[in-house]
Image (cartoon, rainbow, N blue to C red; front, side):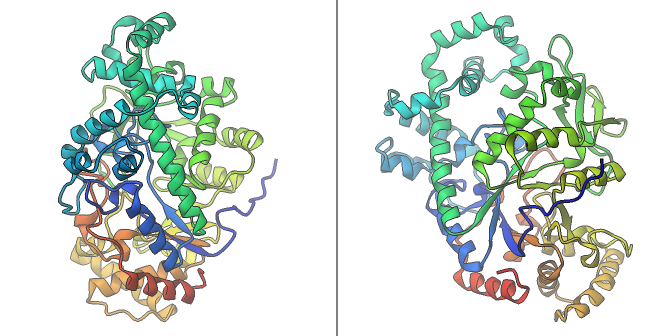
Length: 508
């Protein structure tokens, strides 16, 4: 069968967007939330002429506060809930939410927040009418799984599910039912949190969409081991009879790490998924498209071949490549859900199999200009080699900022980068002071905006010309990530400058 690459719904028009997670918004309460500051940022994006606002997974974060490690892949992060909205609903008082006020020093105050905000949410739940028809309708069996999982974990002092008593550990129906009957209030508290989260998110997304801006969301390829996803569906993963990990996910040595990345997530048993018609994955995609207008699928190459590492290994060096589901999963998803506006995160080590999968699906891939400077004229990230059906970035959440990238280059690397950039700037008539990193970074953003990719996305840190202190994530580093925050709102003058740039490069 010959596949003709369709034009993606994402890249039908020449547009631009901004990348910033909700947690990075400014505000008084220790972390960005779905309240007024989010709407103000959406207003800024509208004024600037952006057509897309890209965020990271909205999920309840787990290990290391990473949105790529969650207790449940369909959950919302309670820390992103707007407390002022709960005051407006009569569930909290202004004097009570003042307890969560933290001086904004440009970092998320996770440690101060976790206890205080969850305590306030419990107080709000105590005043909430659980008999509301809408809330009762929300409490489906799917969400009950999450509520029971969180309640068991809370009652067990935070122990992972492998250490729970046998009946609960193995998700036995009678044991789970008995636990719920004895702990219904705790279960319903966790459902209340998700109910409030998704009410607020849908209201925020509606506001964003009314401004003519689409939200790009994110599906991580893998789920966390100690999660509802695994506890309720152990047969879908490569585990032993006791539920212990046999194999884990990661990537081999690459640009980001000399020893590769040992993510530790359980890998899928793709044969079992295929036998079910990929129903679990298709349901996951369906939920994602209820939340977002466009979905970026993280680590897309893992659907062609994925890197599998022994669970006892200390690094990712000794892993092996295994065959993934390929196009079959996406063909089934298209048959059931229709044509989907997907962005394929196709970064990292690629081969013909990945390129073939990209052609079959027609999904646009990602081009990151920071990867363009290896001296190879056929480098796919060079502006001249970027395809129209692509999403071009100055960097992603895993990259340093442009300023940080330039400042941290070794002298020989800097010379090579500047030698590559000079003719590129000249071709586009971009005037740059080559000894000034701010000027060079602005020039690189111009290169991205001028390239053939129908859509380009610029992280907010680059728009503000921030350094490495504003980096969102360093892959392979377990702590200190995901903390970046804006100290204040975005200046109107910057929106006007961006609009002129987007007009110049025909992206409005």
